[in-house]
Image 1 (tube, rainbow, N blue to C red):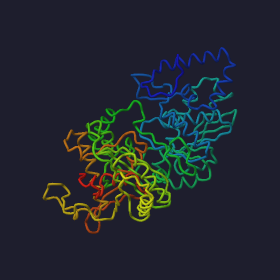
Image 2: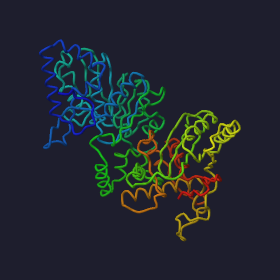
Image 3: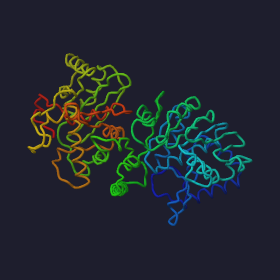
Image 4: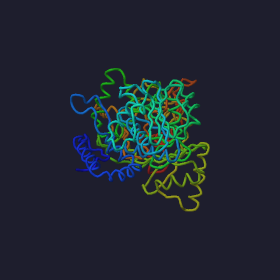
Length: 545
């Protein structure tokens, strides 16, 4: 019988897992000396401990299956455990941005119990916005009742000697052997209970006075874990997420480590599940709630968003769904870091399919130019748009140096892109062929506004083509390769910018609404899909819609 282990095979065969557990319990009872090795092993392997021995609870299964079942982690949940351990050992802050119903709280509860059992003297803190969410005796929706269920579901030989009911009191769990504790707090009292090894803030985007909590927690723990679904722009959770570093398996020192749990990470959820949920939310008039809770869309309730999140999602692998051929020239774009903590971003597309996306730390513009050229020199003829304003002007200077030294690839043609420049095709209509539509020069304030709006149009047409079966010229659509390493970050950034009417009643774009940072990846994509017409013969006939 195989050992229960992390899996994305779904559903889980719980009968087999229960049978394996019972078999191991009998083995240890027959040979008590095996327990010493088991304890030593599990002290260093939290994922295996959770998979082998921890339980979860789901009342939705009543009448159709077990409501209390083994907590067998799927892949992203197991990665969450490894991430928490890495943050703990490195003493770095953590933030878990999650879709609803991903089991993240249960996993963090199981990790807390593992610390309580295997890290002598550890002090784990848990907080939430309301006391009844932290602990309500007998209610498994509360955090501490979850942990009590995990503890009471363990074989007795894993429990501390002398453990009694008083050791699992209201908002307090005490290991009588090692003095390890798990304690709870709520609301404004979070952080008032003394120093902690690690502190979990459940649904931290929804706190009423988060700054007050931050002040209390600041000196009480080195490892604060913000665990939440999203709740709009500008709050403490959102600002911390924006300033953080997305977890890629390694710690980025001095930054909040951001771990994303998207609905696609759950093996029981597929596109059909998503469409059912989306359709119901739309029928109920709750699209904004769905966008927050499922799509993790911070701007769901923000007015004037240029590219709605659902349009972006419809464009992911649209070339597969709509059978869009990968034809046409390569176009790349470079958004140059403007100093400070900003980053460079580069995007590349083949025809209408986004195939390349990269982001790197701010360096001198000479190195940035060399990186950008190296990224595309093997693609054949390619038009490389670059942000030419401010520090971006250094890119052209280095390109001239490369050309003088004979190191500039002949197939790479640099084209300056100025966001504040006048619009392209000023006498053209915003809606092509519609004489009642305003002229481009009357509608858009500048090139940036025109480029963002034209990209919006591509996403809108793609969304309609996928969802409604509408027919469009394939050259006017957009597809995003789902294998891009920065896909989730790009999704968020594309739906960040807002549009409004400026002083001259022309469309202006705000790329950084309050509490957000510059959407560098999205800027690069915008530039790539609205290229400045090149004077190079390869590109003079290219006219992207």
